[in-house]
Structures are given as C-alpha cells and as structure tokens.
Image (cartoon, rainbow, N blue to C red):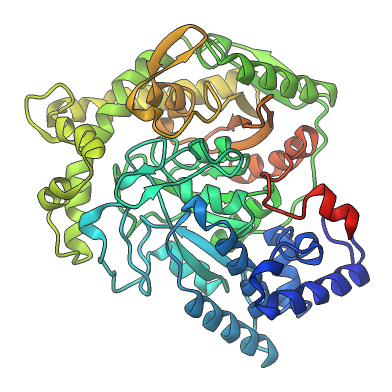
Length: 521
C-alpha cells in the first residue's frame, strides 16, 4: 500500500509509531517535532481515516496530535468551544469499537471541526453572537448526526463572522480570527474559523456554511479546497439561517480527495475517483464580469494558473452572460434581506433558544446590527416587501437559473472558471472602510462577494482551489462553478484540476520545524 504522499506502508507505520509516542508524551514543546510533522498533522482526511480503520494509528493518539496543534495555534482564535476531554473520550470509544471488531464508518475516529452555526447536542451553538452564548441545542443538526454515524468525532465549534453576516470573521463578540498565512490579515468569512483550523493543520477536514460565499471566500483566502454543493445536496436544517433559498453547508479541506470523502460519507457514494485527463476539458471564461478590475497580484496569479491549465490540455472557452449583473442585483441581496428575520425567528423558536429575534438583534455587535436593521425595518432602503420577494422567486431567480442552464448547454463547458475574490486577504480592521482595487475604491464586501455571489444565488456547485501565492505570501484561488446537480462530476474534475494547479506550501510555522531545525535533525 502507498498513501497519497508516496510513502510505503512500512515507512508510514514506522514514522506514525514515532509520532504516536511523541504525541502521547504530552510535552507541549514537542508538538512540532519532525516525526509528528511528517505523519499525523500532514495526513489528509482520506489517509487518516484509512489508517484509523486499519488500526495503524489509534484514534486517541491522532486526536491528541490534533489537539496539541490546536493549542499551538490558539492565537489564531479559530475555535469558540473546544473541550479536550470530550474529544479524547470520544476517540477512546472509537478505539474500543475497532478493537471489538464492530463495523466502522468511512470517517471512523476522524476529528472534524464544526462551524458554530450548526447545532450540536453536546456543545453550545452560539452563531458567534452574544445572545446565544449559552444556547445548548438538545439535538444534533442532521448533518452532524450523519457525520457521527459515519464515525466522525466533533473536534470543536469554530469561530465565525457574527451570525454569518460578513466576509472578514472579525467577530466583535468572540474576537477576530487570524489568517494562518499572515496573522495580521482576515481569513475570510463567514466560516473563517473552520478555514483557519484546516489551513493550520488542526484537522484535515471541517464543516463550513455558505449563503453568499461563506465556504468559498475563507477557502480562497486560506489556501484551501472548499466545496459549496448544489443547494440542497447536504441537509441544512438546524443551522442558524439567513435564507432557506441560499443556505448550504459544505466542507473545507486541504485536498479534493477529502471533499470526495465528505460527499461520499453524507451521500453514500464512492469516496474515491480516478483522476481525469485534462486534455479536451472545456472551461468557460466570462471576462467582462469575473475578470474586470482585479487586484494586480490576483490577476497575475490567476493568469499563471490558467496558463498551467492550458498547458495540460484545458480549452478556455470565451463567452458572455450579458444578463448576469442585472439578475444578481435583483436577487442576491434582496432575498437575504427579506428572509433573515423570518428564518432566524423560526430557528430560535424551533430549537428553544429562549431568545427572540428582537433580543438577538439588540444584543448583537454594532457592526452586524448596522447591516441587519435596515433589512428588517419597513420603509428602509434594504427592506424587501412580500410583493417584491414574490416577484423575485417567481421571475428573477428562475431567469437566472435558466440563463446558466442555457449557457452550459450551449457552450459545452464542464465549468466556468474565475478568480474567487477580487483581491487577496486584506488586513484585519479594513472592513470598516473602503478598499482600493486597481485605483477604484469599493466596500470590502463588494471585493469579496462580486465573483462569488452568482453561483450560490443560482444554487450551483462551486469548487474553490488554490491558484498560487502573491509576492507577499497570501493565497489566491480559482473557483469552478458547474451545472446544477453536477456535484460528483465537479469533484472528479477537481482531482485533475488540483493536480495541474499544484498545492500551496503550508502556512508559516504550521508544520514546524524550521529549515534550520530540519537540517539539525
């Protein structure tokens, strides 16, 4: 057997044994030693799950290694709730189950961080907002229940932009989350905690949630593979909502194979796929919308990545979607503005939070309250009456989805490709001001959301993959949006795209030792 890093089974077991012994020692200063770096922390979820099922590593030792890494990266503020004892207790139960010869699930013993907007029966679900600081649901969300049934362990609940209402994850109630590639920068939002945890190797696979980019923006800014499936593919019930038309949970990982593992664990399909040949694959390019006005470094990295794809046989098909901008303006924000109050009101009541929507909003941080209040106040500029909403649902959303369906049928492309965001991660705190992109000043939300919004509004599967690093070391990503329902095909295509694009180096210090330490060892 070989794993994905071309390590023989004998080498893998020997090095893992050394790492297990090291992680079990509990010496805090040893968490970054070479054996641990080269095995447990560097494992993909696919590799780790396979080793756990075979008994090549114990669930307890693997969980211990990840918990040590969580401690090392605590300053990133990726977690709101992380209870080491419960994680280790669950890991020991997994080990007993394997020893007893019980049937093991595809995620057996794999610790998975969960965005803290997804209900968990044994940990609070704060949605990152003060009024829910002590909210303890009585049941798991269906997604969490499915993950546990597949053998996964809940590692902890990750920090997020408050109420999922923003792109920075500068949470004014629970503290800002920091980008592992540059801790002065944002990780993206709203699922910034999951992204930071996965990028820093605190776990190989995590749960995020996306209404208008909240999976894909953090994946892009933290150098990850992120997947927002076709709306409805994974259950979103018992997740703090914004809009039932757009809300969708999905995974963050460091490899497409792990996105496939997640998809298979929830959908019952195959967890593996063969890498497709890229020759003859057609990808759509709509320059007038997705490529205009980009940050110079984003444009440079994007062009270099596209050149790598064409070098392996990808055909870039130029095209236009002249109605796209108008339809997005008619749908994306108005739907969320209309839905946020009734959706949150139902959620708070259904799960017995003990909090009303009015109380939730009154206790929310000023930056979030400033965004939500106009949307829920009749007569304000963002308020959407039912009559306007009905027209959106009857006319404009169907027109958007028909436009995409016709485009894919007409062009024959497997996916549309574009830079996920207009610029790399800005500094923490810049959300309170405009940013300048190629000489044009704009709200940060526009720079983060312009490219990412159409896919989620139309309900399409969107795959984000790292494209490269800027000269200052920040990740830049490409997004690939496919036809509705083509999730499995998109993930299989993603394996080949990932092979052609290459992977990023880990964030500085995530997999210590330094070069000098490595040479000394």
